Length: 170
Image (cartoon, rainbow, N blue to C red; front, side, top):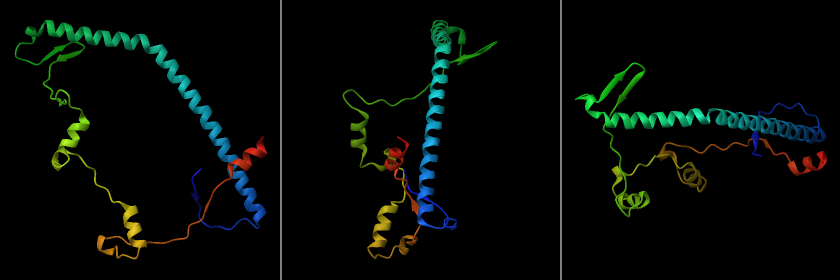
């Protein structure tokens, strides 16, 4: 379980109460996990039921779409110069699409390696490497030149000892 941050409002009087609070937090975490597991199980069951109930309909839809494509291809002359044929319940159409595929004996990985030096063909999402900047600041370097500053705080957190709690429940 990850550390959780809490705002300091002293309500507990001694370490026994603090330990009891950790025990209760652990129990609550367990209850929530069990409830979420039940929920996920029900969701999966409903998904499986819906999948099974609609399997024939989805297969029929796929077959109709294939038949529609084959019929349109066989009767392409009926489109004339138009790329779309309007029908009562919708339309059928042809659109020119462009897709890139690696040439024979090439993979997308090999294409990427080949394009590495040509920046405009390789998509890179820039983001600030905060870890490197923090390490630089902790090493005593001036990071203000990069528009950042190091803020140090002493934040409280807690961690529940789940093993001990499991032993008590068992």
